[in-house]
Image (cartoon, rainbow, N blue to C red; front, side, top):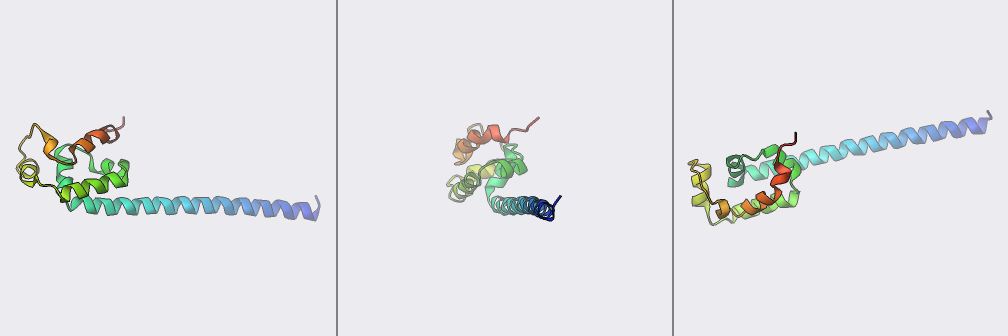
Length: 122
């Protein structure tokens, strides 16, 4: 093997290793960014009645944060903050009363829409 071939082989090996290292670094960075975004969403949702309503409805909060689109969660928090039905909501989430018609909640239909995504995976 000539010196040029040896040099080319080493150079290609180095470039390959560098590409793998870069891809792994980007993967870790993306994973960190997603975790940070999830934490921001967790904190935001917990500020509203929405958090207690999710628990009342039996929705796994972590699954909700991880599988629903970010924009849907932000819509839910906006709907909750502007909700005119807080007395009825409080009957559910504070008093624990069973309400047969949950359509008073501006997020209920959206939660129904996303319910297949929220179902536990076996």
